[in-house]
Image (cartoon, rainbow, N blue to C red; front, side):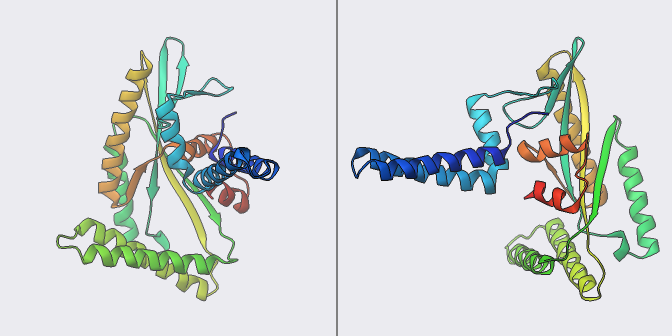
Length: 270
């Protein structure tokens, strides 16, 4: 699949910034040096922006410019970067992806709790009336610098929990999720201390709908995604978020070939 990624946009912006630096030095202090300096600054800002927040900037740019991406395999990505489209005969197929943030591990539950959790999951998927794909990628994490990252995530989760508790009208559901997130990081740190290798997982949901037009297919897919999102989030008490831009494209790529190593999968998530 041939598409422009946010990383490529970041590299392109860095090249523009480098050309601006060269132009500012070659301008001899005149107007060309000023223009070169402006270009260099703009390129640097865009490079950093695409590298850190490309998943937000890229859909924003394509939506504003009404850019439609078409892959070499016949798939189409609308300007909103929120779905994958393909025409099959006289119909259109639209697929959307949802990210699932799970803060609890089955290894941390009792056998009875796992049975109850499995029942909740069965009820969730049995209430969905259309074909839906639940996918999970699991891998062993590299413990190099991992503990420092976990302690940082643990501190961030504690801060979110503290801020929510300090509100005049705190959200009970958010507090419950933040508490479980804090507990998850504490369990991960405890396991590392005991010498247990940390496991990483990425879970997402894919749903596809058809329509006689692109708009009809997109509307149907969006309706299905909203229904699945509400059903799974309420049944399992997890965060389910729509995926757009680069995150959506990664999931679409993983439908064909998953990263074979831990380093590759983490490099795609950076």
